[in-house]
Image 1 (cartoon, one colour):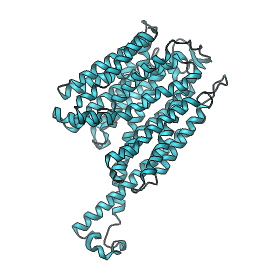
Image 2: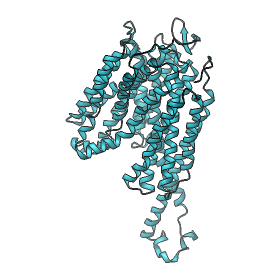
Image 3: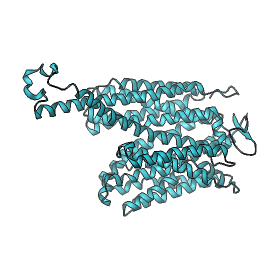
Image 4: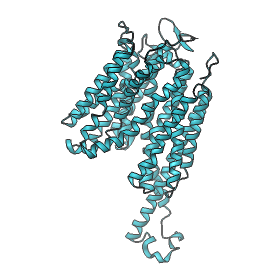
Length: 523
């Protein structure tokens, strides 16, 4: 079912009726178009993480500090987040096919310029513009995919497309590490352009030309306040941990600008005659529910990986290589979950698959709250597999649900909004668990350390240890401090796993809000 808004301007008070969207016309060579769209999506997701392990080498090449070279990543993320929102308007104004090809061309060119950069200022600038072009690749590809497949085939198509979106961040760091270690860090920016060229040629030949509305005017005020809000929020998250959060004037200013930007943008889209994000999007219950659930999904997806990897290396003392192999089943199980969703989507209610996926994810976090440093490799592999399967079972159905009752003319804007919220959720999740880990670690160190005193009889139960267990000597104090640090770190990680479990359960509670289409068709 679709949503149509009547009135002189789109607003939350407009009259809304639901109508069945027109049937999707068969599109020739859909499989080849889908492959091109997967290339478009994968290279954008890949470039968000492929440079991670190359940062120390860039730092040496450009003579930069750690904070300075981190902008190679931050500039790309901020630009992508800001430019995701207006992609719906830009697609309507210039045509979706034309815009997608321009984004691919710009992305490829500035990828090569990043590889050729001779200074930190150059590579940060090139990454910024690369992120601006890359912002349109995921929402535009998703919108095209929804249009070229009929409703009953969107589940399998989205599952295949989603694998490209999920596998990019997974293979990015190891691929970037191998290229940097064996050859040079500049090669990490040469991986994407060949695939971009293949996608450009394929889309030019295969994808029908889309209609452009030359009379549309851009909503500069709405875009400006949203850009300020998103950029300030991202800056706050990126710099908060190193700047001691709200004790820093820089973080305080960023927080005020973020809150003001988001508030003004909300007021603007409700009151403006022609905002670049149609408020009719937020009148569709399925879309709003799925968007918020994907925001929570973003919180869990990246932050869970950011916690599991250091746990295995620093707490369980696994070698880096073994830790990587133990996490690999998570990605494989995620792809298996997506493939299963593709097979079942025509026969099983999407809401049931979302609930099943969230239950699997919740169980994995519940189990992780009881982990000890001695957790066995086999059990880690099993838990990571269940977690990856749950995430794969959740992602694709939510993407389908979001557009089930949304009007076809709102799909491109809807895809941009969904990806914006998911990206913000990912950034928030990483910053949230990192801040909680440090804060809980410090608090627990003080609480546990309060029991280390000469009057604690437990410290005198092992006379054979001599002065090793007494805080009265430098050697004993150092030994006890290490023990306290270790225990505080373990409990802090377990508290973070509880936090992710809570976010997953909150997301699960939203499943009943998703409504069945009025036609009675299965979601």
